[in-house]
Image (cartoon, rainbow, N blue to C red; front, side, top):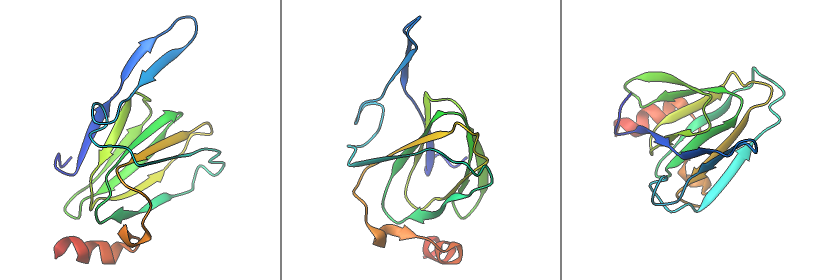
Length: 137
């Protein structure tokens, strides 16, 4: 894993028996940026679906699997690797210019993403060949 492009974020976790487990994440403490946007994905009925399939020019985000599991494929243009996302206390800090895909969803998978900026379609690189050219510049 290229540490300059991706890092693991670990949230605080407390067992609150018998009432479940509590996970805590704070902007600028656990999440290394001010959160301007968040979204979550659930009801992934097709375990063979492929989500993501893009990179960002400037956006940074942290991706969590808060229920179930999925595979996070990462590509920085030099190497490719895969992370199994199945621990709600661990998120992946995805910096700019990293191509990512999400696959192999469990039936109960819920994905939470927090981002350091608002949505901007011009920040997306949605074509892999364009991504390779962009990072080579």
